[in-house]
Image 1 (cartoon, rainbow, N blue to C red):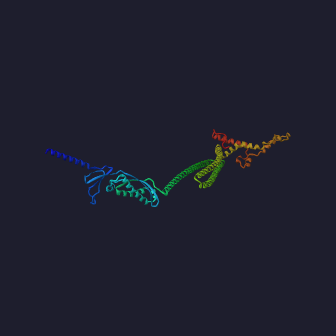
Image 2 (image 1 turned 135 degrees about the vertical axis):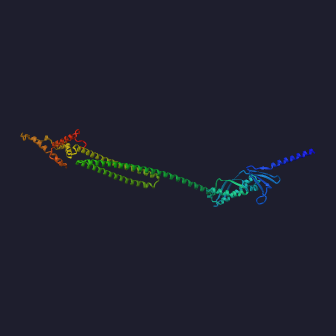
Image 3 (image 1 turned 30 degrees about the vertical axis):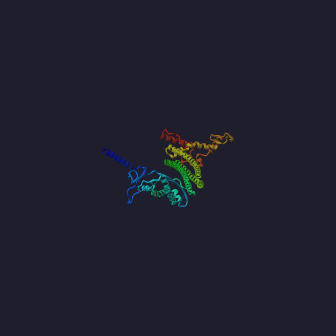
Length: 483
């Protein structure tokens, strides 16, 4: 009795252990790369009808023995190469669309059930062939609804249409489209290749055009910059010359006004008139300068028109050469005008300096005479007496005395011999000082008429002595600057 109880208890224990082991083995866990499909008695669906299978992804389930069983669906992606050939486009042009699709079993609720119903038990190759057939049909359908230009240029739209149509059909068997890659599209007639060549040629031409335009813009910009620089430099030079001329004119006017106010004697007035004459000459030279500049400008414009107008028909290179030649001509004309201007200015400056020195000398003579015009004229005439006497003696200096025979009879008159009277008569024939002034178109002052050179010299010495008494230490002779 005791032994039988122990046997029964051991048997029950073994049965329980075996039952537990069996139950533990029926509890199945689903790995992440698979779908656990439980089929058999799995409950009712939403339509109150029995469900065909229960799909579990990322979890676990207890598989009841006898009434349920299970299998796994592999989620490994399947790569399908689809080389579609001779597919008709909307334009009835046959095209080849080599492509590669990547599909896999979907993990979406509902689509997993489709996969369990249609793909459970199939190998990866069988699933590959089934999906390839579906993709072929849908790819032909998409190509038939699009133009070749649209397929070739708008790849995003083509791929979107392919993905939309193919994925909708793949979902019916529980598959999901992961990726679509169209490698190249060709057609039998070479239409796509021609479009590519046309696009490439257009791109090359556009690039060449862009490069040419940029080069042209660069050359034009450089030429404009050089032209602007030349114009500004010329304007600056002209402004500088104009400023110098205006400054010189103002200085000349100021000097003339000062000398005119200080000058009281008639000779100073004459000197002032000469200064004004020099100023008139300077203005005339300036007018000549403007005329020369205008002529140079006209010549430059004419030459530029003759060169630039034909050059505009040629290429940019000829235009730049023409501008360079015009610039050389302009510089040459400007150089000639500047040379003429400098020559005229030098002549005017020389004359101005001479008249200025004469005026300064006359001014000092008048100051030396105590600002007395009569004494100033007396000093001036006395200073020139030696030269006047020399001119008088010029009249008889070339007479050959050795060719004259004088018959001397020894008679004397007033204590002089005939020879002495002859020589004295010759000297008396020399024109007096007043007549020399009259012959020169000038007139001696009243207080000097009838005076001999000696008397004039004596009067000048008296004036000098009188001035020395008033201002001792000053030079006795008039300044040399006015001679």
